[in-house]
Image (cartoon, rainbow, N blue to C red; front, side):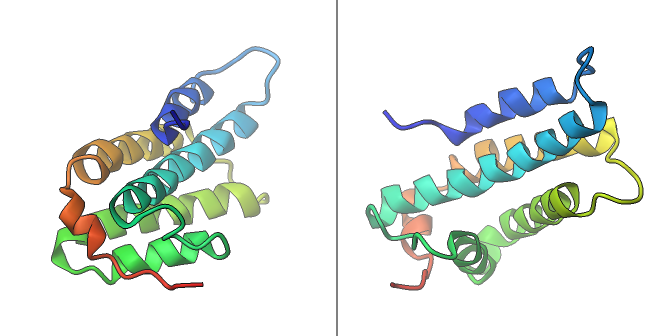
Length: 138
């Protein structure tokens, strides 16, 4: 059985806890990164379960999923907004290294939102909704 990306949320939650001798900022940035990837790859696995292996392109995977979910209409609107927010936070955590560090609240909120997205939307919607997502073909 393949790895369930939702399990990254367990690691992300641990990264929200202060660990002696481990840089706090690095932990919080890692939590935000894993929260995003847990949701993104949960979408990928669910789409491929509904549309077949390889239906999500190997190149530009993020963009393909992002645009498919964003263009799917009302059923996926809150999922799209949440994924977009998680992506924005992940990009800031990964690439904006100057200025303020992420806070515990930021990281914990990303983990909670990712968990909600995976459980209440990605795993809860019927396969038919995922079959109608339009993805670019290679």
